[in-house]
Amino acid sequence: MTYIDSAILDLTEWFCHRFQMLTGRTNVWLALQLTNLSIIVYFIWAGVYFWSSDAVVRLPDQAPLAHALARLLAAAPDDRVRDGRRAMEIVQRLLKEDKTTDLGETMAMAFAELGDYDRAAGVQRGVMAAARDAGLQQSIQRMEENLRLYENHRPCRTLWFDVQ
Image 1: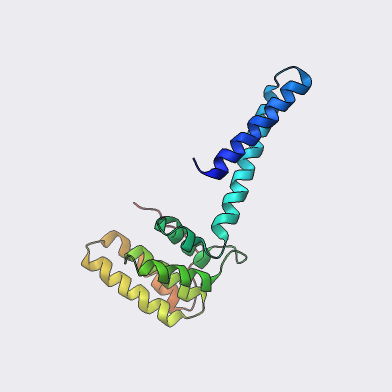
Image 2: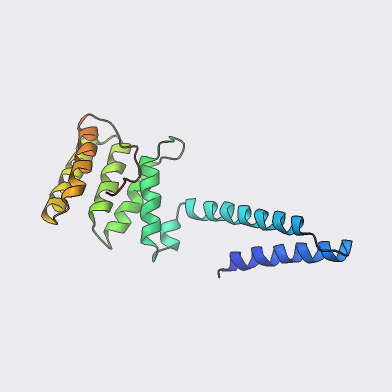
């Protein structure tokens, strides 16, 4: 359990104990409300923590989380969330450690978000060639859809794809 988890649980327990001392009775409703509040506080904290600009630096062993953040920044349907520059920074850091077709696709998405559709298409073609060489035939059709988007100067707005 992390420090923040422990602090939230301690705060919730303290509120429940104070309520019991003040009223002389236990209140299940209050306990439930405080539990809900602690969950909300936790998710607000998590959002602030992971959205901060140096999340990848602070979470070097959490590459899947950093990759998910990069993909969200590159392809989120909501334009208030997208930030192609930050997505590209994260992808470039992750590529120093590992090279996967998923990470390559995220890089293509980031290039498209930055308006560099030629590079997005080039990266996407490279990812498709690697997928073909690896025998990932099921993925290639979906990858072709993104390639067509980039060739038509349109970004991808699908974060993750259904796996069949």
